[in-house]
Image (cartoon, rainbow, N blue to C red):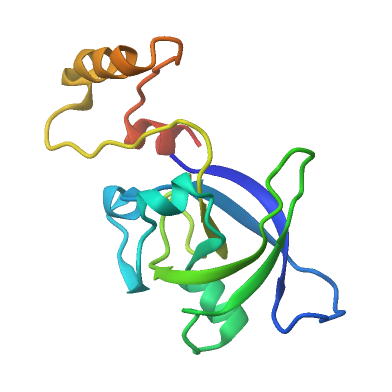
Length: 166
């Protein structure tokens, strides 16, 4: 699952001295958008190597692209992403490698999606898509997680319930 942080960014070219806008940054990994049913509209999804190498790449949602590039393709554009919190990775410059459809993350009643910047990495959360009741798989999923990482808590929440609570 994505982990949000708020970061500042600067649209290239370097040396732009305007006030830095703020954007929500979500840390994700390969398959995140497919799991949520979002479409990669152009470019590509993250790969395992992007996550493993902490690659300086990013994916933006359609709202971000519309707001900042006004109909131009975001693929290949460069952004400067500044860390917000102590200890957060300083990504300096990231290159946009993908454009995704706007995704509901917390509130299905939203009529206006916020601009989002996705970067590879983050915490150890997982999203699973299933055609059966999630509760029927909970024990098996927890068992698999504990078999490779016994010290990691593995709470399981159906996404519909998480969205309904927010």
